[in-house]
Image (cartoon, rainbow, N blue to C red; front, side, top):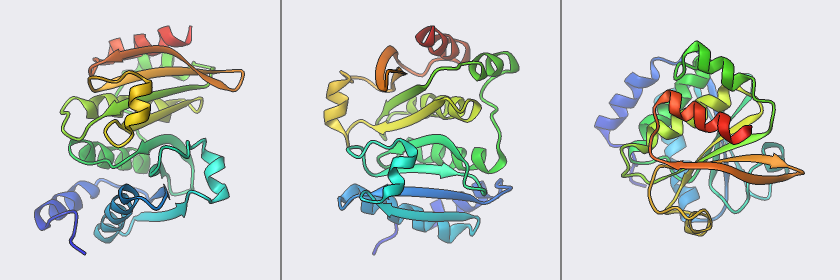
Length: 223
């Protein structure tokens, strides 16, 4: 089977992964579709490049999927766990390709090193005080150069606060949910709060907002 990552990319990835300090586990929930096969191959190629990357693949009928609040109609779904199996609520729905691949590596490093450096101390404090169950859904496409910033902000927020889930959703792969959320431009960020067991949309915006504006949108949504 032809490699997804060419030799030049492999060398660059090896260099980037040198920043890892602890092993990480990439947990993939897959179905029998083509996209799942691509993500599984991509993760295996990453594992070959650095033995600190562990890959665990489960089928959608695995009972374990229920432990992670994964939507079964959004597969393939991928999580990044630390060396102790801790879930930082980082979710990838679809292939982290194109511009999103660099952010995927950035997230692996962040979980390995347990670092959140996207926010200043004041904003970290504000986000860490949120006491509601929140999910930040960022709809992206591989060719969007602004999407990675929005995705990383959502994932870093999730790392900060165990009440928050940060999601990347590949809009083209999941066109039905993109239609449901009226996604026409990306990055499109939707902020939802769980009320009586149901996710309720409380805010949304289009574009990669700067730090303070992003934090303001999140806080406004959970008021």
